[in-house]
Amino acid sequence: MPKLKWDNINVLVVDDNAFIRNLIVSTLRILGLTNVTDMGNARDAIDRLKLSRKDPVSAGIGSIDIIFSDFVMAQVDGLLFLRWIRTSKDAPDRFVPFVMVSGAADQGAVETARDAGLTEFLAKPFSAKSLSDRVLEVIKNPRQFVLAPGYFGPDRRRQDRPALWGAGAGASGHDGKDRRVTKASEIQVVHAFSNVRTLRDDVRAIYFRPANRLRDKLGPNALRGQIDFDPLVVQAAESKVQELVGDYSLWVKRYVDQIQQAYRALSRKEGASHKHLVTINTVAHELRGQGGIFDYPLITAFGKTLYEATSDSSVTITENRLMLLEAHIDAIRLVFTNQIRGSGGEVGAALLRDIETAVKKYSEPRKPKAHG
Image (cartoon, rainbow, N blue to C red; front, side, top):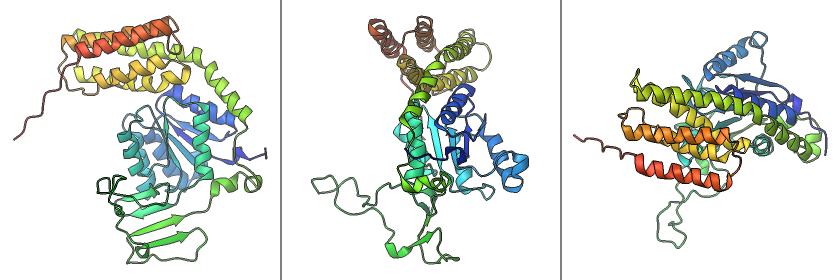
């Protein structure tokens, strides 16, 4: 396998969860991407990137080649951070590949991020292999950028084929008509080395096709052979993830303590209930994204249902809601106390059934919104 200069790639990792942030940084460095800057929140990252345009020495960073950012963060979340990157005149590089990392990998979350200018989505729980695959994707298959009314970012269509209407008379489920209304004559293409210096007034969309800077940074061998990570290096990164399980157990104890304290405050009616629910919801979001990384899929499952149960912080705290929270907290604590890995066999199946029963028994239907 040809030697590639992975240390020439500069990566920025932004995540307010120190454990996951360190995990991503460690994995990247084992893969050979040693030039990694990590930050605990997007607000500071934006300030640092602004400064890097004017004074990279004071900022401590030069050009950033790839950004990994968590989706759910306080104050400035990943979506706002992405929108700033793509639209702000202060952003040092609006074309930088942006990888969103999140446990909320449902279709709605992915589509929202895509429509804000996302390059790739890395769902939690992730592995060293899935993380390395995202790095390879942005290098090997760079997409053109599109400037159109209401959008600037990577081409959201990965294949150049008609975007067909979903309903129609045909057997394939559509009427064969392309939804795209922009004609080829209304698109201006700007290449990296073209002599174009002005944009036409009659165009509806502009395609930017920049040079593959990341491939070039990997050195001449990137042009001659396959761009890939050594499988042994990826395996070493996976082993490192497993080594961190002990540290993760300590980290999770803090999580369990957080949700336990919030639960007690709710049951005693201490302070504002919505703040305690937000605390539990935030922790649940982290748990559902982390458990599977360390072979605790039960934690991912419990974190998901706990997240859904606390997604509305304005609800009234009833005895049923408290019972539902307590069932989740007990299940999460039991998994870690007994180190129940994988599916957990009969014990794991019983815990899953208990949570499913609790959700059915204690969940309360949402009241319909009043009209008029």
